[in-house]
Length: 345
Ligand SMILES: *Cc1c(COP(=O)(O)O)cnc(C)c1O
Image (cartoon, rainbow, N blue to C red; front, side, top):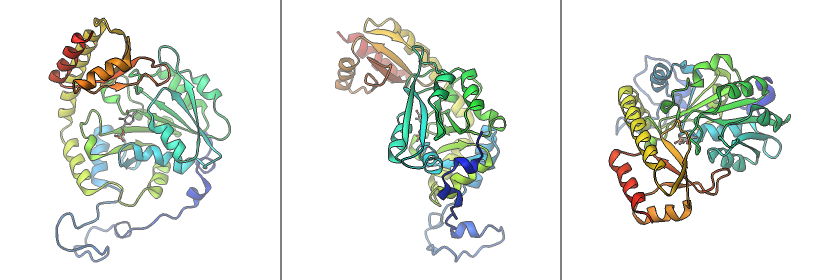
């Protein structure tokens, strides 16, 4: 890969970060804090939170098997997605390459950061070709976006093809593993040491059942984490979120239980979809949702909305004509969906 100095925007490379009161003091002995203009009353909300979320990172480290210094925490995955552009892509000059179709935020953040976005179509089985992605890259390509299991298609991408991109591309490869808890594939975050140019994204929003607290993670080598840390807002993860995340991480068995329940419901729902006359195809999935090709996605979507049931209409997304994306709900919710679809004519 290129050196980080060549990849990072020169202004970011040179940046002297803001130094907060909580950054400058890092000892253990103090008990009188008169350094941050906080109100001494209204504990514990009166205090600024730990800007580097060290207690929380220790927990994540033990659950995810990634050293704390290789973890960045953001306000959802949205924050590290945006930071990747702000750290690496010179507006108006650099570009990024991404699989297509995939998660919409990569493109939105490219547009916000005035960075050319180069989508590379997956094949008919929603698989990617490393060569096709690499051919779309040039000397100003800073990032390649890969999402596996992919959203909205649901499938995992071929491991060998991902590894080929990781080893052949000279810039940063971002692997979004938001759904890896639902997949039987070995997560790539376990191979961080092998790929110095890899950033892996995880989130508390899906399997962990904590979309409301907004906590996303980026795993990468320490030098990349340090760059994200100097660009982020000083107190980007609030105290309440840190507390709730610590509580959630103390009970990983709850997540295991939810995941196995959701996987059972997933196969039940898929089998029921396959025999619906209005369903033409269900695509293979490794996530807590599936993509189904319907006879007429728009009309069926509107019909479900009328009944207070919301799925995602993906018919306008490349390669997803007439497709609905269905999230796996509780048994009761799934039954309501099936009952409505069986009544449809
Ligand atoms: C849902 C999702 C996320 C999570 O985003 P948050 O901002 O962490 O809630 C990230 N990536 C993909 C592909 C997703 O589908």
